[in-house]
Length: 201
Image (cartoon, rainbow, N blue to C red; front, side, top):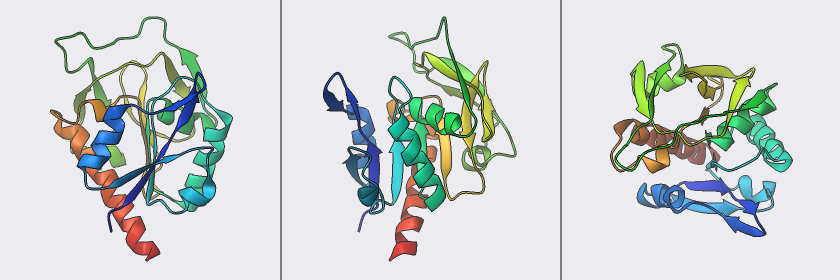
């Protein structure tokens, strides 16, 4: 059976929504993506991994779910807001970006990041510097989680003691068609979801 990836769905202006490229990544990677509404812990227990997608503002319910995922060691990948929520839960502090970069029409990347060579992120990518996209309006100032990469702000966080607990400030799902690093990250997440599935059989 294919691994089941639970994607946290948030309500925005009286509608639940998720970006198409997030869904397509997991449909095309031979997994079963399902939406997690109302932060259903019973449904989360049936998933082999959880994706915390981008969004607007930190939500209390999301923090409760991240704590639950962390305690049960369910593979978790946080993207943009998802990463910020992961960091915020562990004694984190947030701030606003006054002038943040977005991709221009002819660009694939916005800036470069530097990866800590002792991090799990480095173990996956085997690179000290990579280029990423960027479209966030807030950033993580500090957290008790391990900081695995930086630019002028914290770009990724992790807990190496967990099966897979990694948060990324950028959006690999939007670069999946042309960026090898995005594919390596998603594939490693799915591999750990598979391992979690096999452990539960």
